Length: 87
Length: 359
Image 1 (cartoon, helix red, strand yellow):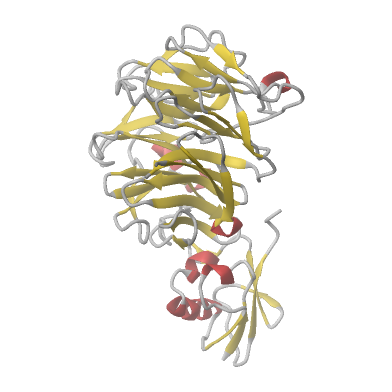
Image 2 (cartoon, chains in turn purple, blue):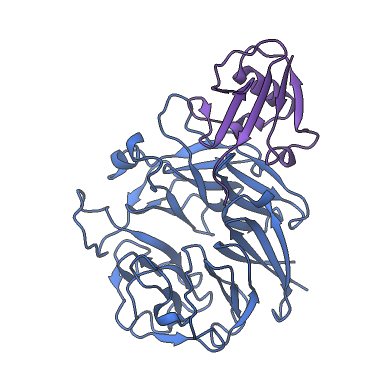
């Protein structure tokens, strides 16, 4: 079970979504798709055409920069960061 | 008694300003849409829904909707995509229009998506594929950080299948069949640069159509003001008398086809009102002459910009004219531009202002 930490900009968009969510998934994209199943529309907020992570969405798995296909070990920590822009 | 509802799209969310028919006292509410940059917000009188086209740097593009005048909001981008294989990306949703029971949104890279269920789900209507110029905007290399998008949609309220779309930096196109086929409508426009095509390669900033005469259209172009007396088939320049040929915003009087408003701007990098004097210019003779309107607008060190969706006019007998600035002020005139008041200050940079009369 991966523990996903989400940015503060995401949770107001989906009622019931909290900053930390546990999901069963083999990859980062799999984790996002698990969240999508519970909160429809969430994938679009993190993933663009390609599919690829949106430009200013950064993901770290166990503190290492990750991409959508990065594998998740059991009990992995996944940090989703809204980075850089927004000033 | 009807309410007058202003919808203000800003760099940090949407706001509303509400008044009665007198338009003297206004109540500001917002920010809405979680502070996302809102490029255009409209009110659909048929469904009583506010729609806002917004694009977050983090979370992408979506169309927000509120069925209770801003109290609660939902958003969706389901279907607003060119798909994983196409190569084009939807980097921004920029302009909204209702067409009968459909809602349309123009996007960057250029395309129009439609929704038949009030903005819950979307599908691609058209990319104007095959039109002259489309090989440029369809090339993924032209896409972000390029700025080619659908910047303006102009409806025909008597025929939902008939409307115009502006491709930024390319020109205006017209459809009579709901977006299946298109024709360029740029004959007679000026351009001060070379282009590969005769009918396109023009920089249409804002296209408006007279509610009182369907043949009459005006446009603020990158180079000059222009008028059409044949529904956009041919254009004539009417810049003479204005302090600048450049600007973005434009509005046409709802009851008089010859009265039209623009906000000329310095054409360089500044793109603010000349000489620091806030001024709207009006013609009442279809562009033969122009008069500055500046009573109670700031005339000292007012370096204000107004973007292409930033000015609008209401349908009252004495029309109310409104504009929002890139420095966060909203100005209004309840007497068709003769005198002005400031409705709001200290808002985020304003992208769009639209007005609706709500029963």
